[in-house]
Figure 1 (cartoon, rainbow, N blue to C red):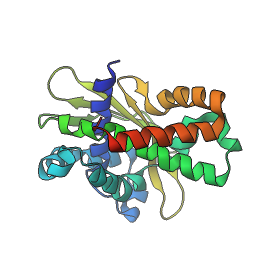
Figure 2: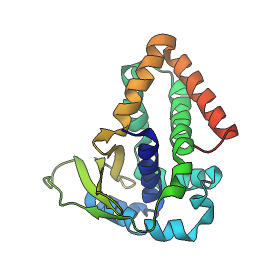
Figure 3: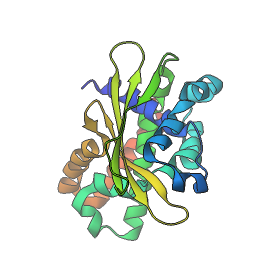
Figure 4: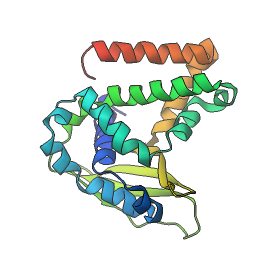
Length: 215
């Protein structure tokens, strides 16, 4: 798959998450497909209204991630899955740093892609295939615009408690699961340099991205 094309699509995913905040009381009772549909419905209006997001302003995108995306994502699970078995041996400080650096990597890698999202794109949520008692589901969508429709799927889990509800923990773009892609990359670093080596690599990459051109 063309890496730049994948980056453009994942940039669209970031905006899709940031399209609307999710009040906790509402999220707890909201069906997973309804959540994804609502989060996606105002994407294009948000892009048009915010020139700084269109231009790939990293600080603005980080703010969107922290205030609007993270409440809808189980990012600890996402990071743990990307790191793989080594996560169980990580210290609390290593886990905290890995989550921070992984989030920064995703935001900085795909921030420049947001400017390439076009106004003719729209998301269609497909009918769900799940039972009412399921606590782990996949919501399948299509991004329609110029060219062929783009497969964009979300894997969610139902979390308990008042602040619970459905949380996203993986994304599938054109048949490629995001976490699985990073797991293979991270495994190579861990096998060669250990967890501290992976952290150092992520920090170096993020530093390069922050001082260089937007990717």
